[in-house]
Length: 343
Image (cartoon, rainbow, N blue to C red; front, side, top):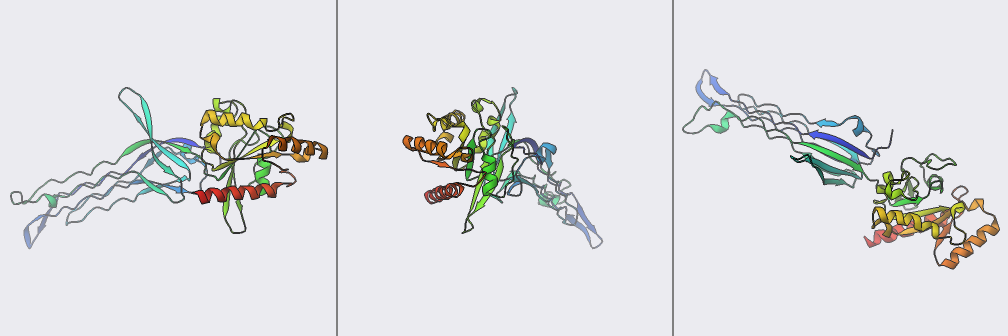
């Protein structure tokens, strides 16, 4: 199934059933009076967050969601049956915007819900109320009313859905930095891995569990390049998914490191984050140099010495062989624990 993180749909709640205008007529009750029942309520449209879903692809295929109408009332004081609510499941992390257009054709939107927890529900459109039967209109001056209320209409809304992945950790780096290999090494995720840029075309999620069965969700964000915040490469499509992460693991490949200034490579992507959203550049980061298996012992020792001279804490790993990965994972757990305690 394709990864889709935006969709536009229309939702309509059910119309209420009409009330009934009925007069009771029986052999022993020639003047029984009105006995028309009320119509049933129309179905609501309810959105529910579900961890089972990871894409909005289905909402590109089906764009109209309509709840059922309530049943009309009947004679002998029989009320119409209320319609069942229409429950639509969305991926956790979906934002729901209502799209409106004014008389001049100007389109605007406002956020009406943010589904951030599994099982979270929000009523988007309420079903119409059922009309009252004629038994409600009986009075001392009108003992046999012959009219009843029609059912009230439901609501209709145009919506834009936007999915922002919820993860604890975002893997950030240039194309071919080894992010996919890392997430495959530490979790059960099996992203596509190849020796060319932009292998990862959609975000991948991996889950790590510790000995206490705590979970850490890692998002492998497709490789960013310089100018990503302005739409170059794949970056602008996926930068929004970094917004939801709690901290970042910023990975450089050993071959991309500037040997004169080893930490210089981190600045370019940090600038892209700041241009897209200044708050994203303030997220805590763990800096990593990957693919140390491609370096000789002398080259690696020289690189580590230059990094130490900058005063930066950088983790050296090989996602392919697993060297240094355990130490990095331990630091990621430590950071996550600190964030949990702070919250």
